[in-house]
Length: 586
Ligand code: ARG
Figure 1 (cartoon, rainbow, N blue to C red):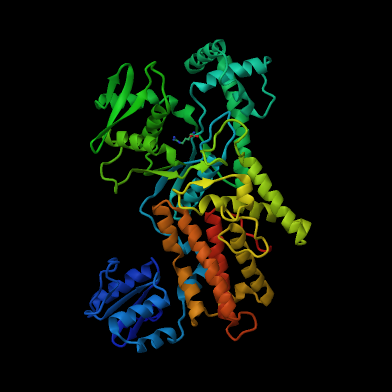
Figure 2: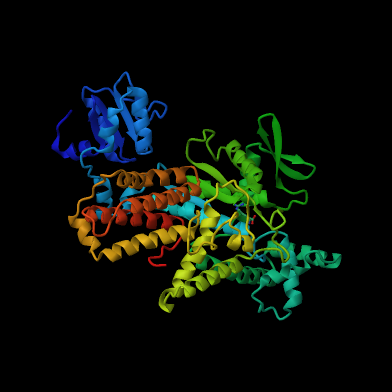
């Protein structure tokens, strides 16, 4: 083996020679691994293809490839199966001390050094996107939270992210809203903040409908100021409500809104017509999308010449691709819109706005999450009283948390902040932990009480379950262990030595080392729940470690405190990426 002193650490950390076989512990995706492979290539040793997951071992070549996803049991099993060598077991279970410098380096240099490297440099995430004059409902909650987490993970991976709120602020319904506004506030000033009430006249009489139709024309022609003013007022009041929700959720968004892209619709359509993609179909303008043997029509302009949802999305996509030069555009909506986006993307491909090869940039993705169902198992509606309002949900979550914290004697000073962190965190985690496609019921009582459904608050004391409360408590517990030791953790970081020696230390350490890869997977597959799962397993591993290994007052105190600290740092980064505020005391 090459004996370059600068690599000695790497060799010692990740390679072991056992009975003539090289055992390579892959440290996670970073350069040291690449360098190791490079060195092996230059040596006499033969290599297994590094990314050939099908062939993790090869007895002929007497080479072991053991990556961080292998736990100790699997590794042992592997050795038994392919070497028939039970003695091997001992050498793995009690090897010489194992300094895990990558974890120690992370503690010194910060968790950002573990951020994944992605090939994309700029991304646009379209999420939340509620509609003006309607309350933001729980479906928008799921979009807001999933979208925010995707944006956070990309930002952590040094991608330049545009967070777009494509607010539904245009279209025929504004005619009714404006007319109703004139009726309700003849003086022209909107005083009522609950613009949701403007909907009450939606299904009203014919005379009203006619006035509303004329109002749309007047608004869209842009000639009469009073219509523009009324529109702006409706948008502003309504958006005030959305802003309050975003503020509470700690979600940052750039409002552009459908109206912004409205002026680009003719341009985008002209291009599509120029490319011969749009056909006239009894007055409507239709793009015929071929999918396998099926022909799917995408109506780009209605019979009366009016624009619709598809026209707006075509123009938006055109703008982002051609003007903003976005590389990866991600839309987060419920799965009900899957067909819509499929057609939009197909149209963009036909127009050569997007390359035919999906592995190339620019590319588009639709994250279609499972429907949010109401009490009755039906899709939750936006109108009427059945809707679970987002603000109510947040209020309720906070109130219930606060009650428990007061009962536990939390000082007033920390009460508000902790109740918000735990309450809002619970709501967010509930929105994130499911596989994207799973339908979920977002009934507030269920969310707060039903163990089978979301198990958020019911186990505050004996918190088990996969909930934010459990995870936040685990983190708070680690912090209290460190505080309780009376040691200066910064000094330990500088002077202490990180070691993973016992089985439980090692299991926890290996899991920590997978963090970057997990974030990468969650980003590239657009699956935030993968990160939730990782965090949940991490808490479990910490619990087993802590129940087996004495920390404070033990002979191994220093290295174990460092491991506690590393776990807390990784957990906090997970919370950050999930948009959850960590708590240090519960
Ligand atoms: N406003 C739409 C709704 O509430 C969602 C918009 C999603 N974004 C988009 N570019 N179509 O259903």
